[in-house]
Amino acid sequence: MIKFFVRSLFVTIIGLTLLVSSLSAYQPNTMYREQVAVIMYHHVDDTIQSSGTITVDLFQRQLTYLQQQGYQFITLDQFKQYLAGGPVPDNAVLVTFDDGYESFYSNAYPVLSQLNIPAVNFAITKDTLNPQASYIPAMSQQQIAEMIAAAPGRIEVQCHTHALHDKVDGQALLTARLDLDSGKRESEEDYRQRIMTDTRTCRSVLEQVNPSPIDSLAYPFGIYDRDAAEALHSAGIEYAFTIAPGMATRQTDRLAIPRINAGGPYISPAKLHKSIQNQIQAVHHNYDRIPLREMVENWGGEVAEDSEGLIVIRYEGREWKLRPGSRTVLHQNNSLTIGQPVQVIEGKAYARWSDIEKLLFES
Image (tube, rainbow, N blue to C red; front, side, top):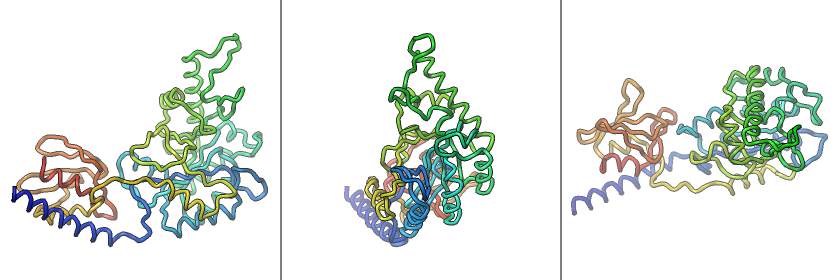
């Protein structure tokens, strides 16, 4: 009993020492970790006034202010990797646009390029095929291809449906059951096939100009239900974005990703910053993200890397193998699971204290 108490006290003292040392290495502007603020825009224009339109100047001031506050902008691909267990920078932000307006190409894209900020635009593809026919001109296929070629991986264009961004009798086409020419109401199978056909068309149109996987969609008007989400998923959509406010975490439903509105004329840079701060989720952790090597070596163990890129922990004649970005641990021909994946940031491995403590002293 005394031996256990002494060891526990020793482990706690080391933990506090490492925690203080680790925290001292963090930038003072670390506001949140292990979550992403997905911010949402629609139209950037200096002449039109609406609740979903902001000026070029306000757009630039918002993004510049966020950069100055220490936010780090990520790509759609980085966001997907994060949801799959990969690392993400502190204060991570993903910039998204809805509708595929031409103003993204002419007004927003130059600002994004100047500030070196990636973004994804969810386009209505029937409009990209006939860009001047819509009420607000849309980006053309050629303009989309031009941006993606100039900033591969940094500018993405994904789906906002092909022809379902509309309502009938006040109901969104994505969720409504329509009346057929026969006078009957659309069956559940008819509805499902309509959603899947539209989604496949949207993906096909964008695949002509975007070499990245077309697997993401923003719900028109933010309206969806489980039937719609399942039909979209069956047609190849892996990530779907809502307009419900909140932060995205690894526990977020990939077909119900929240976003924080940034695209209103009343949203000053400081107000956008505050909106993000108000949505930060508490991360319940015990000595979160401590340098793995220092942690294990202070317990008398060692950390190495094998030929397959796995992180190997050796302690008291036993061995554990961890893959960066994964929660799975191999130990004595068994597969164990830890609470948070080990992350490699700038060549250095970090892990949650309680996860490694449990591995070494309880498994």
